[in-house]
Length: 532
Image (tube, rainbow, N blue to C red):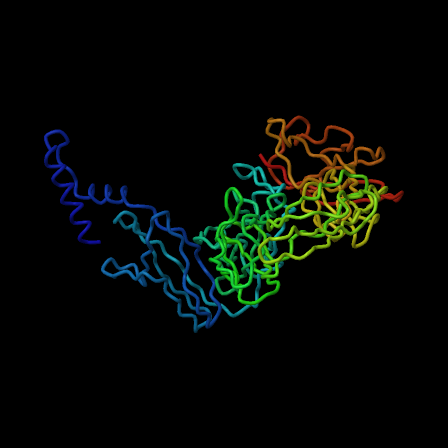
């Protein structure tokens, strides 16, 4: 570094001497001022940090893009840096030690910034209730560009342990096992969103207390739902019937889809030395194709059987035609010739004579499932303002039905947890797809956690609009000192963030809402944020 400064000074001297007639004499301290101006900013650190006695963890600093960290045990200019973060000495409670770190970018070193380490007794503090919580993504969606949604983002949530540790954290995450990124999570926040993701992508995040590095870090993985992006690889071009001892090659590593799905097979090559039926499993590349499903191909080795399969149809639907050629290219005739769309029945395929491997006859069963059997859809919703709002389908129920909330995936469970406030839809279908019923009037009553009265006609007023049909309901809004600011009705326009014509500052405000639920008069008290 001293050599770099000397070269830098020498260059400045030449420049200044060549222009001395224009600028006059130049003071010596001007060189230092210019050098500091061109030096990069120091890395980001948290100081002071509290280490527990006998805790062995390295210090943490976050370099700028392209920056390389330099660690020092003192601030002496003659000390040579080390590239690895030091582990503080923590044997004595009450001791205080200062370390220093800088960063080098494009060969230029920043100033050193101190990190003060204080040693205390182990308090046993932990990070609380660390979890994935998709339900909160809509609340913070506008803080991101483009807005975060459950289809392109994941949200990590936890509870701040204010009694023992600060509310500032290091968040180190990687997307789909890629390069790790570390950043500070802002103080007083207890969530972290990673956005601009694709369906099915996962994010692993390690949460570490910035102020108390010895508090055990916690790591979880959150994923974006695949939804309609789920795909099963297609291998229609691969034959599934072989003759005994027939020559084969390795199974293809790319599917017939467009774009092709890459992956691996187990086993990698079709074996034909033994007659019988064998499964071959294709596993997609989970990094490149997180929403692709595992595919199993069943291979039949010699005497060949036409690979027609049983299938089902809905009663009254137009039945498919029975093909005279099987998928593994065996020709023949059917008996009966056409499918009855009202009753289940068996159908026999007889191969034509003279074909390779002497194919055998094949019988399939066509099952006719009843249509339009779902005639009623009932549900329950957790009480208003419950922290975890749960919508539960009560009719129809059973193993023959699948359930969907809004545009999410169908599931076997009748319950949907952490449902956001507002109106939702529920869809129920039977497992055969022959009967579907949907209701778009599922109401979840909760209150908005914040509003932004900035005149952009979006989220400018605060109200609990879900109670607008409850004519007896009313809401009182107070400041943090208990002063009544406004009485509103859910059926009205809501509060615009003013009091006697004066804009109220950004802050938390309290409210009390009185409402009827199931014929019972109730009160609920909580608070929300006004953001300017």
